[in-house]
Image (tube, rainbow, N blue to C red; front, side):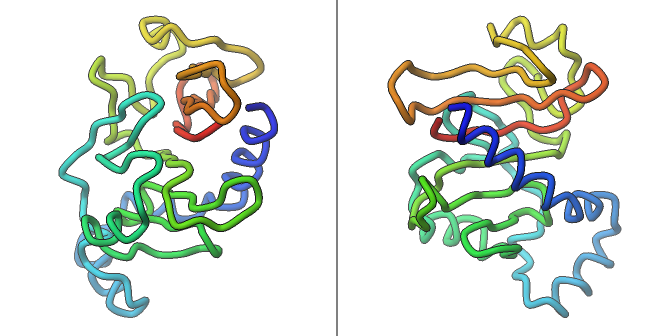
Length: 172
């Protein structure tokens, strides 16, 4: 899991800019989307905002075929081959696994505070509130593995200043 977590963290550092779009007005988004060829459905706010640890964000589960994701939420915007932003930059879906492009969801990531777990944990939640999720914390990260086997699904909470800054769900 450590190797994948490091690669996810490295990719995330390179992809910070789309998070700035979250505060833009919807008319600005519509004009920008039209210029960039992004379908309106891919930049609209998600109706499903639930995070299921080790499984999904916004109803997009690990292992879901890319065609099913695109049918449900639109084509999104690709920042790099196999990395696609949906919901106007609020959710990143990674279609890479073990250095190979796949046709299935291999990881989902968010830095947007609008997604939440059933217990209310979201980007912006304090480290103390994560205790209810039985996560293990160290060196700016808190994690929870869904299994002990190699490549088992897991959830990673990246912490900054004592609060959740990013949530990743991926095969470890």
